[in-house]
Length: 370
Image (cartoon, rainbow, N blue to C red; front, side):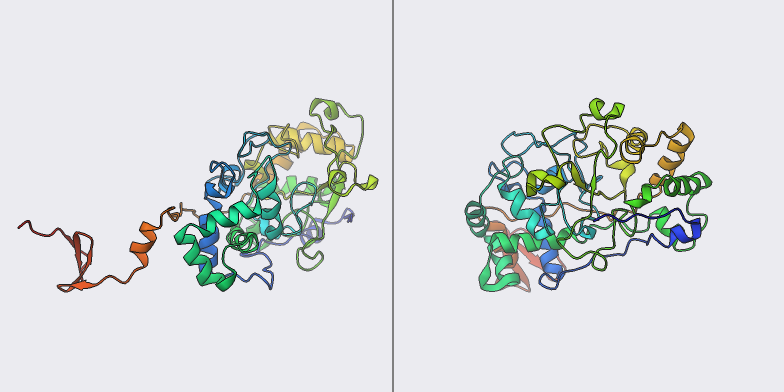
C-alpha cells in the first residue's frame, strides 16, 4: 500500500498530521486492566522468558531510555547476533504490524515470534509455559487475571502487550504545535517541517505516528504500510551502508518477488534519540540518515541547510517519556509471595511476621529475649 501526499500549503499539510493520543487502539480481546498491565511489566523485565535466563524484553528495548539498545544489531540469549536493528518500543501500540518486514501482525503475535527466534529469546512455548507456571507469584497472578487458562504463551503475550500499549510519549513540541501553540517549536523547526513536506518525506511519514495511515481507521491491525528501500538504485550510500545484502526485507517472510527490499515504514517519533538508523543499524547519525533517505528514497541531494532544518524539525518529535520504575519480580520459590499475600494471625494489636511484630502504626518490634 502506498499513499502519495501532493505538495500542499503548510496549513493544509498540518491537517495530515495528528497529535499522539494518550493511548493507542486497544483490541477488544485484550482490554487494558491495571493488574494485567502490572503483570506484563514484570514479564517485560524478566530474563526467565529466555532460554538461558539472561535476556529480557528490556535488554533490547530499554524503557529507561530510548526504547531500544543503541546497538547496530542486538545479541540474543545464546549469543547469536540479530541481523536487524532493534526498533524502539515507545509508541509501539500505534503500529498495525511489527518487525521490519511486518511479520508480526500484532503486539501479541510479536511475542510468540520473539520467543522462538534463535537470535532473541531462543525458547519454546512448552518450556516458557512450564517455567512461568512453576513460579508461585506468577501462577497466582495468571490465575487471578486469566482464570483457569493460567500461564500460556497466549496469556503471557496478552500481558506483555497490555504493558507495551501504555508506553506512549505524547506531548512532543510538534504535538503542542499541532494543538495551536505556535511557540512550541522554533523557526528552524518550522522551516524544517516545510522542507520535509516540500521534498516529500511526508509521502510515507504522516499521521499520528509519522509512519503512514492512521491505525484503527485507515489501517486495521495486521495490515502493513510498506516502501521500497532503497527506491533509487546505485547511489553512493547503497554500498557504503550495505543497504542491499542477503536481507531482502519483506520477501524473506512472504516469498513474494514483489516484496524484495520492501520494508515497513518506521515511525519518526523520538527519532533524534533512537539511533543507529535503518534496518541494519549502519547509519549512526540523524543528519546522515536524512541525507541517505533523500538520496536513496527521493532521488534528491539536499544542501546542508535543508538537512539541518529537517533535523531540527525531527528533534521536535521527541515526546515526554513517562517515568518507569523497575518492578519487583516473583521469586522462584514463592517465599516472598507467600508472605506478601497470606493472612497473618494478629498478635497483641499487631501482625506477627516471623520473629517481628508490626503494630497498627506500622512500627516493627523485635521480641524481647527471655
